[in-house]
Image 1: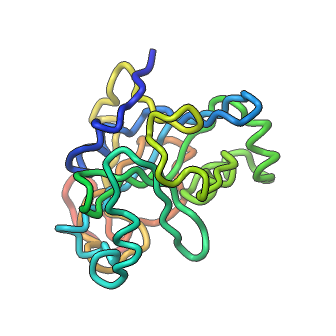
Image 2 (image 1 turned 90 degrees about the vertical axis):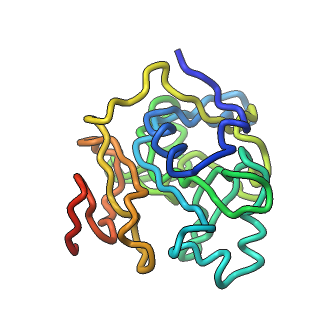
Length: 209
């Protein structure tokens, strides 16, 4: 049994929310009624007020405005020309979000493969842009909709993922803020992205990668 998350769930610290969202289910309902879903196996948090990696507020005012929408709305961040799915956090006017980095497909894998043909099935959704394409998400249609919308919604498992099953690392592909342990993933899950964290902080030990 799963719990459908409401927008109010995201009115808080994105780091804490990201950890709780891990292990939940991302559900995409296609216009024809087919259900695509996947278990959330990797997430990252961004919190511009205290995040040196968050270039939105420091350098790109227009993009900062895009992120500073009401908590619980879907938004997309573009990296290297690819859309990345996020949920806005905190109060309106503050740029903060949780990035969905990877999911483990559960329902509708055949349809996902038509959206994004791959040779190895495990490469279908093991990255933030990959899952967007596999689910057939159109950023223009999804941006600004609520996290509990029929077309795309997020659920939590009935039982939270225990700490011993969670690996915490630095985030991926950043220079500033690379020592912040704001990436959470399911330990040993093969659907986690192959990306290397900017700095490994597992069990509190810093070392360069």
